[in-house]
Amino acid sequence: MRSCRSTAVVRVRARRTLVAAGDGQRLVMAGGGTSWLDLGLWLIARFASVVDAMHVARLNLIDRHAVGQQPFARLAKSRQTEDAVIARCQVWIADHYKQTAPVAAMVKRSGLPERSFKRRFQQATGMAPLEYVHTLRPEEAKQMLEAGDGSVEAIAAEVGYEDAGFFARLFRRKVGLTPGQYRRRFGGMRRALAPEFSARPSPARRT
Figure 1 (cartoon, rainbow, N blue to C red):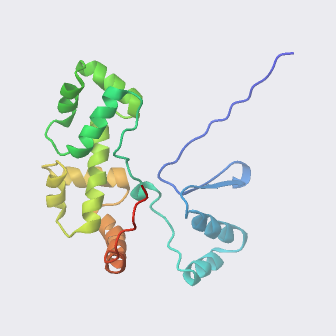
Figure 2: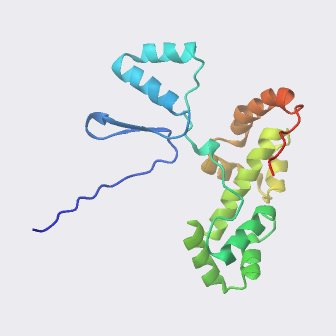
Figure 3: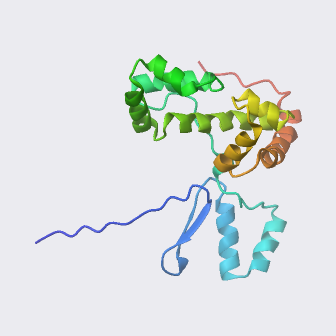
């Protein structure tokens, strides 16, 4: 008897926190840890009404994650690959991301021919070296937007971009929000928490 193996296609929607699919949208999936709130509101709207869902949202101070998960994403700065050469380059670029011609600098540090380096970097990280840099720099910019009031132009220069317009467009594409929108959303949260918790001593680390 011949065995028959069925296959299913799964499409990942990284920019959405909630996805409804299947016949009659009977399969509903939520992403991040608090996206179950979005799921709850969606189910109330579906089986009760949109008015009821909005009422529940107002009563419970729920802010729907309409911008998806991208603004909350972080690119880990530590070693991420079993390829030791590429891992060393990842660690290095995490501290030298604003350097001019960062990919050429990584190629030189790796000791590999340029084509070999780019191929191995892509295999190890899932991104081309330049795309990796363009992903790391906005991550650093996020922290600056959260913590300070520096202009977008100043932050762009700080993370390695002379053209603030290019940086703003790149940030929007990577994060899903403009730098100003990101600052208003997350900078306010940080400022609200800072007065109470920044004064507290850090908990002792276990050795």
